[in-house]
Length: 464
Ligand SMILES: [Zn+2]
Image 1 (cartoon, helix red, strand yellow):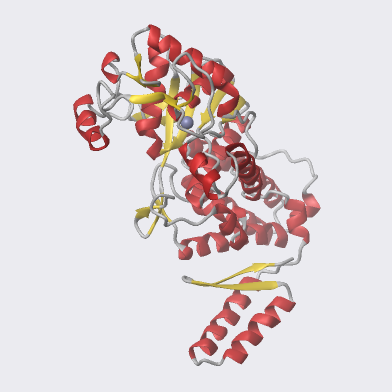
Image 2 (image 1 turned 60 degrees about the vertical axis):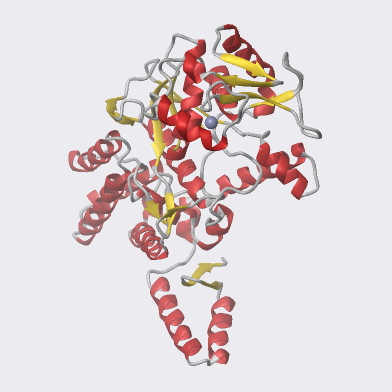
């Protein structure tokens, strides 16, 4: 198995620290509002990484943190006229509700930053003792000049960082690129006592401390989206290397952005769709196919045509299982023949090659074709293919609650027929025949189909 390691900038053979075990830490949400569909891409991808390791018989420990103290939470508490802990509680609950809607399995641990303040203080003190951190007026900074390896994850040179950081120059810092480990509390802000006065930890300290605490000094995989490489992961690495001679992370994995109109979807650019809104429009498995159809390191454009294609693709998988009556053979014991195992090997080869999900999904469709072909020839090997399709699809998080889904009646023509009605309705709207347009909408609603008009066109979902 090979994984692209951001640190070495190449694919490396995956060798876990301990044979048969994988320790994964993925940076989780800062819980001050709902996460967007770009964040969902990261969560879904690492859900698949974890699922694949489990499928390959690794014992996986998966940690995702919850950042529950931060400038954003403080601002949001003021905005919502409430306290920081209440903001955290509200958006943590929303986070769990949303990942469940997305079909993302829960991590093994969800450490909250505020539960590890003591450990964070210990780390900052150790860094200060080693001469890697210094205090000025109650703020503590990491001195990037004292660590020769600083910048090696992102490939940034100290000199360019010094110039870049000047824009927001803080005259207290020895080097403008120094980053905050401990932040002095301002009036009315949440605070914890420390040797440098009351304050709170910096974000980069939170993750490195929780990772070491829950998973040990060295972990196998540390993941997140590509924008976390710098400064967040660079600064986590700096602290870990400052404190221990042992490597912090064996494989750094970073996923590409979800773009919208060619720009990165982000809260700061205000061009995002919330995951909770998107899953109301599209089945979570449609989104999975949409995301996984591209390599995780590439950028994806949030494009309704492509999501529509993913919808058709998912539909065709379910239709196959339905047409060929998978439910009837679901509990049948299957011994796979060589030919079917061949398909499985192709799937594994794709996943082993730096999680090439685009290729592994192509294998699923190849299996679909073969199953139908054998079925038409009345050759029972089709049953093996159906079983293999489900087994491998589930590794990618597809076919959740399969038995229930297969029992609902949703025939293969439904999508096409609805598309047709939407087309006629559009025509009526063009002609300003609102009566007919509304009639179509209401009639569809009465049979359990809800139409929604969006900027990109009309979409529909089943209310059943
Ligand atoms: Zn983090």
